[in-house]
Image (cartoon, rainbow, N blue to C red; front, top):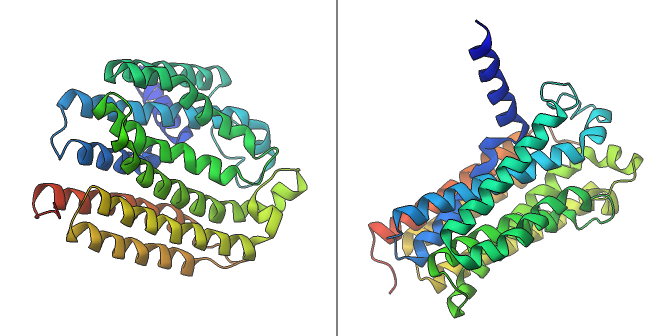
Length: 297
């Protein structure tokens, strides 16, 4: 009689374990890249396999991160309530999720193009490797940024099926995504500055202090806007996308206004609301140009 509720609870715990809703950060940019590569007319199969690949890769990486950090998470009061430390998910179940998601990602790569499969394994290793970088380098934020910044390049490559000069366009978008993600990850890491320093973990807040790290985050976000704008010019996209960049800049400004060294009360609003809205907005603005407005072609 309790099988269905128990199964539903497990599914909910697994979704919470990997923060499935945070797929909103990478997926919109991967889809924008795919649509730009195909002039807004991707094959349905390609579209579905790209979505599956992005979600599966992120799920594998996030589940592995929770496994790698389970001891650290248990010691940190902020993260002790996560699923593995409090026993809501077993270690075996978490490993099964990693393996199943990784296999699904590689299968999706195989269905997209041979070159995607060849690059799938090193991409997966990079994604999983992020979980260990903070143990030896304060550049862990950039590592995470590159991990998410690969998605626009991979999506464009899935459309083309081979390397070519056109890949410079999604590479510029990927650089924008990488600096955007690195910037908000620096801000997010400020809340663990004292814990990380006490436990020998590395981050820019630990290396520089929260105040200076926040200035680095501002610089990274300025570079992100440059990358987004350059991508729009290379595709090219039109005025809706330009307006999207302006609003994205306002969201990033608001994000930084919400946070101060020693005052991170609004970190969740700054982290998820501002950045999730930005990603969806940029995708919608690109779609407006691709499908409804006259692009600068």
